[in-house]
Length: 262
Image (cartoon, rainbow, N blue to C red):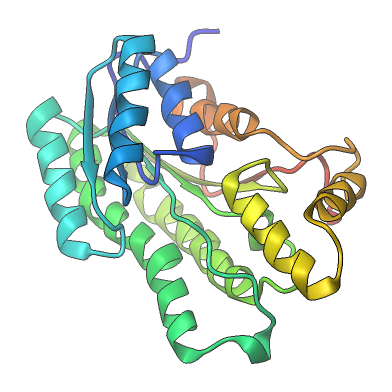
């Protein structure tokens, strides 16, 4: 299937591992040139080199924290200067800690808002003018099924991820006239390092093993397994492509049917 992504330029945040890296790999496989960022320089540069070797696309990789507005501004400007355009922006960041409401602190709430909501605001504000000039753009946010269905002991994620979904709908409404499509991808339980750390943290609290928690999560989904990062990446690549040209303002869950709503 022709995706129309060859020679497009895609920013993919938090792309040194997990779903972000899988998204970068998927876009590169379709011929997208990449601008990758993450906090860990060694992991980021290693991922960029592996993707460059396997795909042959051009890659700009810069380590920084997506909570740093100045760093985001500088990065997007560098991408535009290097490639002459910014077509696609996949926003992504690590999730907040697993806690119930009364366990959380004001500092953790502030950090969650900065990491998962404001980082998306920062990227959107910087990339939209570039997309407007070409009357073509795709912004895809990566959140969680928690943007649709709250998850126990993830109150920080439940609250902040829904804010991202609201932002997505607002941006889609405002910038559709400019040819910019904005959508959100909400993964269910997906086999990443993030899920492993959540399992280990919750296992200690409830007196179970991490494997027992994984088995329980798998049993909750109609497909009876957790997802793979590449399966989430496939949805991201599709939303970024010409094949999704009449889809905007949506939250697409990649959750094996875990969401119980209609």
